[in-house]
Figure 1 (cartoon, rainbow, N blue to C red):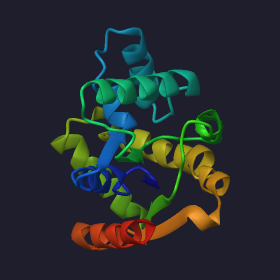
Figure 2 (cartoon, one colour):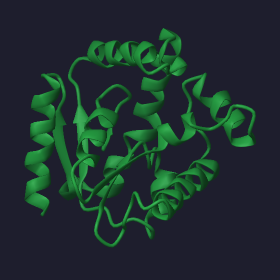
Figure 3 (tube, rainbow, N blue to C red):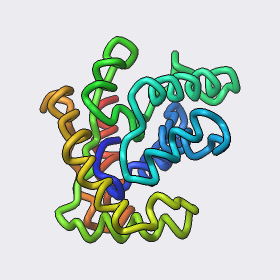
Length: 187
């Protein structure tokens, strides 16, 4: 799942992950589950509170740990499950670091023509999901700038043939239907 903050990556990634033989892994959820007093928790808070990306090395380490824990717990079966990534890779450095680890078969690029839709979704989830990094308008603006500058170039890393563009300006069920139509073509 790929897109700007507030585009619906988490919503549609979780829904796809609820289907048998799909496993949703949200890097942001892994970061938010950290205890704030841990070294990695402090790093996450330092960067996320400013709308910036956590540096590549700790991000990749946390992601690998989350995947390993999911395998050990029996939630993710790499031999049979399709991994639905959400929030990683977030920049070209991370894409490069993961190129030998991941076999990317599609990039679902969730887009919105209306920036105000993204902002409204982030503000709603700040309250609903207790995501303090989404409560401040200055942080939201910085996150959107960071996305344009650092994350969006990842699309060119994977190439046009893997990118499936999906508009998220309609109802969530319409967006998920569009995601499912693309999933069916991959199977």
